[in-house]
Image (cartoon, rainbow, N blue to C red; front, side, top):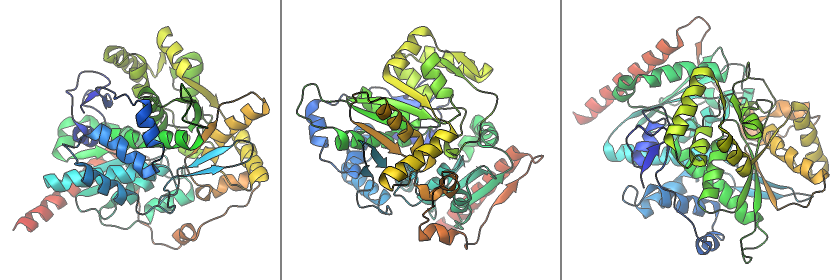
Length: 484
């Protein structure tokens, strides 16, 4: 299985190359050169699999046994999910009035990113040990990515991780999940800025190709192909859990409601659909509505500023993974995609070509949800089910309630729930409800923390470069001592 850049200039790579790159050298994102097609028989066989079983099948399909033999792959995925709290790893809650909530948050940090990052970290360590190499992972986070990335690699001997978090822009719990991990390979910076501002020094560092190569840098943000790959399993599991039967011709449709910021789960769902899964995609966002405007009007442009909302992990203006969706919609036309994305990078505003926009609105429905609607939805779900939603999950469930109240006949629907309400007590209180906080989250309050400030006026890029150089020196020292 080969991977090509959505912008068509970078040479193709195998899965290992895509895993370690993040962005392609031409600024594009890696995608499979050819998408396999799953027939009805395969879907019927997969329908009885557990969530980890589906991840194993999808990864085998997109990685290739010459890179990771099947037995090794299965072991890596079992290891990745060994710390999850629920025996199913991912669990479907069937609630009143046809509300299906797929709980993607049973990992260590109570958010869906634990699923893909725990697998990605296992793949990384597998290749690093084989090649006797070291990487420094650099992550910018709006809240959940940082802690999930830290948990997936903490204590790993071939990996250092640097995380930039937006001080005061994530919840207290999210911040503590990052700053209380005191392992030697974990380095956390608290930036006086929002998540888009802290991306700037990271982009600058990654734009220096020689520096990236010299220090073996990589990113684990949602652009990394291996994360999108694992997230495809959410959609397969949702489908098999919610489809009324697999005996009809054609197979019945299931609607999957995807709350998103950077569009990773949307890209994963669209690829799942392209390889044969009969799902209809609904993408839901908070007041940061670039994806909604793109679907409705073809208006792919930044707004004046990021708006702070209760669904804070989705307070993102640049949905990087839309580039993958545009590429697929254009028939894998890298010239069209490159022109589109380069214009966006230059002017921060693009009107999609008519044909591309009409294709997008055929495959995706969208909705944008206000804070008021989020708290109302959390309240209603509690009243009807005694079930607490996190604000991001409420963005998805709000769509379900809208459809239900219109009393339109509907296909079965599954709402993806990206995080546990336990992580967002502020939003739970705002909805007039009582937070339920698990003991391990309460315990964070009393742990020692470690976090280096990046203040306004500091040279953030220089601080980042200095840290990376220091870690490289340390690793070379360790490697030298080990070989003597």
